[in-house]
Every structure is written in structure tokens, then in C-alpha cells.
Length: 326
Image (cartoon, rainbow, N blue to C red; front, side):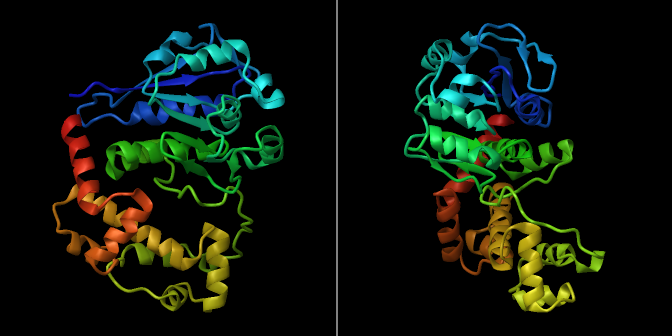
């Protein structure tokens, strides 16, 4: 059994309580089949004392700032701390804390935690996101950051940022999926009773009026598509499943998912191919066929676009992770 990946969640007062508990729940649930932890998660404050939240209660962390020096990942939850949020700078004690972070440590923020990473200069020239309602303030304080307030989360390699609240759950599940594969992430999502996947590029805020009747939703067509990914599927077929015209279906589909039917379908095919690579020994061409991506060459192109690696390298990565965890 390998040593658990050490995560330190840095609580900065007044911290957003909901954001703070997301990493402890998600990563603390991602255990092996024999209940061994894959992650060692601790909450730290700058002085080890209780931290006030924005909602009228305090949280008592288990660690002080020294824990950050041993972290493999540091996560900054949403906060209303004045320096980064209003002045665009780190306070001296926060600057000293960041100086303890080891080179190569993965950095993550949830919601307005991105203000802290930006104040530390870690987002300059990089794409990032935060809660859409704070985008204007963020841009005025940190003009050198490529802010995308429409994204649920942004994975920029060693620095990852998410939008507010529930998007923090999406980011943490994305990291679990990256570290240990879809099956582990799906298990955590089931435990948390949340969707196992929302693409980081999905819009934070979607105008989604409630359908007037169940049969006016595209959900049934999406379920049908997921059960038939090995087949060529045209938008007209999906529209027929929903008993809508193609034009009405496309409009309602985007309203409900934030994506066009074609883009959504391609994303589902890639995700299914990734799961097959993680959990089976099927040849690459057969994985591509079962996922409806045509040929192995097509799968290679798609996987390099979304993951930056070949199918064989992707498979080795997750087989290695599973072997180490066992």
C-alpha cells in the first residue's frame, strides 16, 4: 500500500463553510476496497486556532500552518479575507504560509479561494475561474489572470480552480478521477449522492426553465444515447426519442445541459472509452468501437485532446494507480 497523498485545506477567515467541507468529504471518501485511505486530508489555519465562517459559526481545524510544508496538494476554499479579496495582496502571515509550500505541490481553489492564489501571483498568465458573481471584482484586482467565469472548473495542470459551492465538488471529483480513475470517482459521487461528472467547461449559470411536462425534457433521449454509445447516433434520432423537432430538441438540450447534442455525445463517448481503458484489457480499436468513436486512430486523437496522452499511456497510468492502491 502506497503512502496516502497528503492534502491540506487552508481555512482563511471568514471561510465559506460549505467550500471548506467539500474536500474533506470527497477525498476522505475515496478509500480502497479494504477501507485504506488514498488521501490524508487535514484542515489547517494560520495559527491553529478556530476559524470563523461567513455563516455565523466557527470551525476548529486539526492543524496549524506548519502542515502545509508537507502537503502534496493545498486547497484554498472560498474566503472573505480582506487582503486578497479587497486589496489584491497577501497579508504577511499568508505570504509566509505560501513560502512553506514545496515546489511541485498541486494547488487548488474553490470559489473565491482563487483570489488568494491570484494574490500570490500563481495565476498570472494562466486560465482560471471563480464564482461568476465575483468576476468583475476579480478582474479589477488581477488583470493578468485569464479569467473564465463561465467554467465550472479549470484544470491548468498543477493549478486548478473552481467556481463556487457545488462546483467545488465537481473539481474534487475531477481530481479523484485524474488520480485514480472513473470507478473510484463514481463510487465517491454515489456516496455523496451527486452526479459523477459535470464537465469543467459547462456553464456556471444556465437559464433553465422547468419543463412544462416530463415528456418535454431531453433526459430520456440522453439516457437512450448512453445505452447505445456503440451505435452512430444522429441528432435527428435523439430528437425522435424525445418526440421533438430537431430544432426544438437542440434548443431544449442546450438549455438543460449547457452543450449542443453533438458536443455532449462526443464527451460521453470519450468518458466511456476512458472507463473501458481503466477497467478492461480490450484492444484500443475495440474500445473505440464500443464507445462509438470509430477507429483507434480517432480515439487516440480525442484522448490526446482531452488528456494529453495516448490510450496505452492512459491505461498504464490507471493500471499503475490501481496496482499501487491494492
